[in-house]
Length: 186
Image (cartoon, rainbow, N blue to C red; front, side):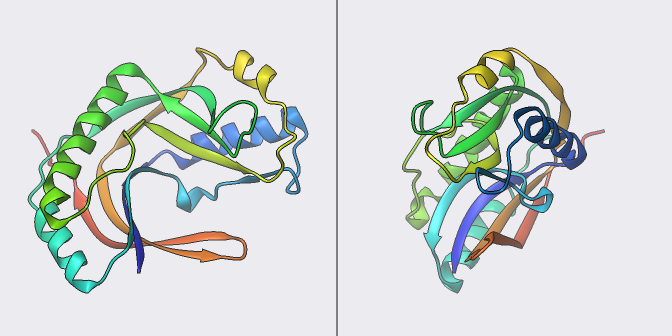
């Protein structure tokens, strides 16, 4: 099965409002840009590709005793991947402190699955995909400029998931294989 490790978010309504604001303000339609569904919002730590049941069990063993505190983040800025001249994804970033905590947790996660044979092909950059772009002719320069330094609201990260991804005609469908919850600190 096709799988990846991700951190789930909890404030989907905030991100949905941001999507609606961007769609309305820019008069985007589905032929131009496709919003990520609320149930698919997450921070991808590492894409694992095709894995089998033995890999799943090894990953579970490596991650189940991972302890981490809930991470408070603030959503800031709008950006694009891979670049402004050929954008494929519109994303929202996170504040510096929250981002550093997400990077630290990402490093810990990846270090636990290295000996199983998984390594990241790129450095983790804390961002959350809001839209997938269907056309190469979309000018986003004004949007990036307008939202540079803008704060959208906060969220808390409390769950790590191994997720299955099934690519469908209308986008990917994700399901959780297993979950690691943040440690309850009193």
